[in-house]
Length: 514
Image (cartoon, rainbow, N blue to C red; front, side, top):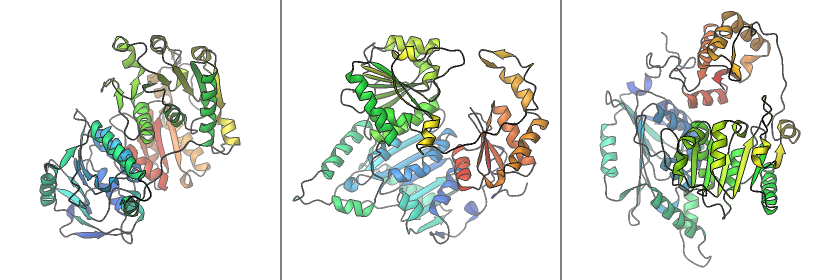
């Protein structure tokens, strides 16, 4: 097929490498500057290459603003099985603790991918290399960028930086390995991170008349300030504090999607009396996303997962799937946690949730949901001691200009739902897919989308199953519309790349599930 760059990308995983070409074919170095090519764009291209499964990052400083740019792409590379190594330095304590925490949370050596991180620590030696090295373990071919860009927003996205791109990576990898095995390159672990944050805080609070090079650090790299609660989150936190003063040990907070329920829980749980926190959800993706939020509030905290794939019960904050907790309740003392957060609390009426909630005796339990009303009329509020602490729903969020206004457009559906079996509170997924993943219905959706000016908008199409999402994306592509499907199945398009392209307007529509 023709090279689809600028069109379909990674549509059929495993069917050819659509992104080969210029990067691998280079025989002479080329210069990457803001006037020509953005470093961030080049990093995205390499991080999304399935064949470049060895990723070595060598930088002086790592800032949270840089993680915000490439974090999702690194996660996808790890999910594909990539081996990622980070080597940075503690020079001047410029590197942001949150950023090191991001890598600490992903130190894995399992069946999917592997991440390792080390810190070059030597007060008598400066450490200023900046290199991003991508190599194929199968062929030894690769792409590397060597120059001036640290892993920060200014370094890879907005600043005036020069970097040389080269396809000759062997010598670079050898030099990286030499630094990696240097005795001054120490392993990043929880104890090191805690001490690093302590030293960083001491530097930030040095007395005015004491000599310090801390101001120099701020000249070297600026980063985003620590996150602060939005007004709606501050209101909810005040309500939670008041309800605890009244003696309540549980409460429900209702906040529309987009108002920051996870951020609220993260901020509220930092009170000194809540030393041990449990965050419960029904999907691992929710747990890892919540961990990333908590990492920004607790830069050096011990944040652990307790799921089917990773079980670390001893953390300052434990992010646990309800299924894993339900199967391992005997492992936890009833008073193990001071504060328990139950996300997506509308699921809490299920028996697995009820058993988990009945087992623990925290000082406070917080239920979070955007949709408190259930079709089966289950009494969620009773699970929170009939204590509705705070409510800011969708309409109120729009009224306060915290959420975008919206319009519903209902159209007649050509699918026949009457003969689809209803099982366990929902339509049978396989039969539902057979009924709606049809050419007639796809043509109807495409026609309506075009009438709404779909090509000039950014669209998310919600589908009932993975097969349905794949079908819709393939149909739209067959009609000349650049579309991808993003989901948890093996046929998914790269999530981070799809979101970047959707946000930039390059991709008009993404089909997804749930």
